[in-house]
Picture (cartoon, rainbow, N blue to C red):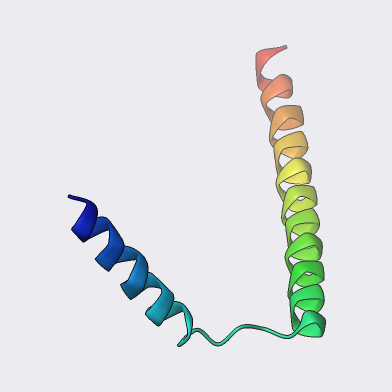
Length: 61
């Protein structure tokens, strides 16, 4: 059991050396893009929900 775990850790370390890590600047830019896209999608969905709620209220009341 312990031997399998040790092999797993060794294999994982070997694979991590093949990973193409982003630079600090790339990480910052990608993070900013994710935040902006998330805000835009949230605003779009919020507006869509608001409009549908208004339409639904017209039919209910």
